[in-house]
Amino acid sequence: MSDSLAIPAQPYPFPLPPGRTALVVIDMQRDFIEPGGFGAALGNDVSTLVPAIEPVARLLALFRKRGWLVIHTRESHRPDLSDCPPAKRLRGKPGLRIGEDGPMGRILVQSEAGNAILPACAPLPGEIEIDKPGKGAFYRTDLQALLEARGITHLVFAGVTTEVCVQTSMREANDRGYECLLIEEATESYFPAFKAATLEMIRAQGGIVGWTARLADFETALG
View 1 (tube, rainbow, N blue to C red):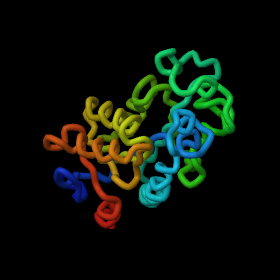
View 2 (tube, rainbow, N blue to C red):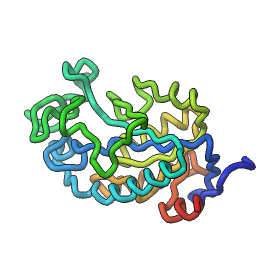
View 3 (cartoon, rainbow, N blue to C red):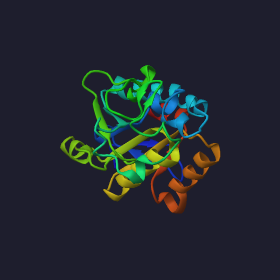
View 4 (cartoon, rainbow, N blue to C red):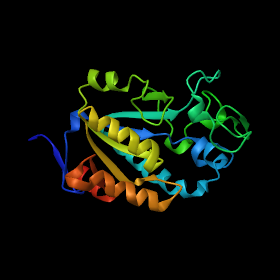
């Protein structure tokens, strides 16, 4: 595209058209990143996700400065759990499953304290917020309609966790025809090896799912 910026990336430069690109920040929620939430209930060391916070904040600042579209997602369920099937709910330790009471309220339930996005990455007024009942951002949400209405063709991804909700959302987007770039420092996993493997899978075979790029290279390319 003649009007695109060339972002240094793997497996080759990512063509970013400024007017048709959105940032999708996946699930930067207290329930995943702070002690007492769903991530900890599953037995994970939530501190492994903390390094993504500052890079995500930097990405948000870049997009906001340019007036480009920003979208935030939260993995969350209705209070009656009617959108949470047993195959998903019956995970984790008994008493600390989705919908149960935890230190930050009911786990992964809409409007509970733990379901809130971290202050450092919180949405600004007017930015799109999507509550998704699944791992993918397109499943049972209006994300595709929102993107189509705004003429978006390219998506930059960030958030947690790399191998679950981020990768699922990227694969959903790729199947729908979107060109996808994941910023490497702006995503993390409870398992570093899983993050590394996911980055390799995304950019394998000529970018079968999409591209990955370093944050510093992205910032430099945007000037």
